[in-house]
Image (cartoon, rainbow, N blue to C red; front, side, top):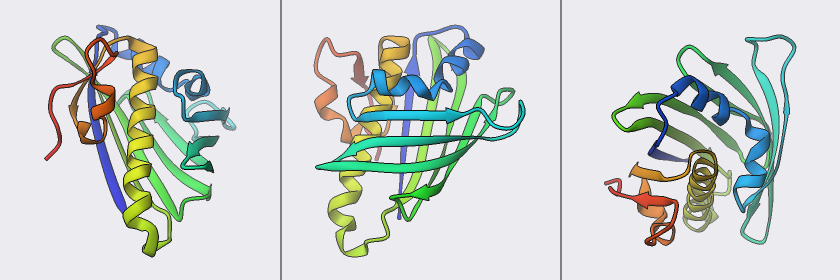
Length: 171
């Protein structure tokens, strides 16, 4: 099992508006190269968890999963957990809060493919795909993205002029 963390700062002074933009997961496919599709079922009533079906390019194939998403507008947080799909286990959280110069978005995901003998090869690849997709989505939504933690898998995205800037690598 592997847990990844990514913290970025985006240039916006409207945390509530930024959170509303972030939780519109259906737009992720148009913002990130590896996200093929996201279909969201809004749930039975406002305030109750919703479900989403994801398809993401992974290696030479497609990863598919369904997840339950609990959205907390007051805390600006989305907790998600796979209900079925290609991972053995997959869960995590998005959090957004205001900071000087914008809003910080923290993303954490824990995953396990359930194939221990291939974990050394698959886990780092999955980390890179996930982090790259998160950064592409956030730069598509907010423009310049500054990675302040977890950028070690993103060195190819940190070229001058890119919308993603890595300022600190996780230890």
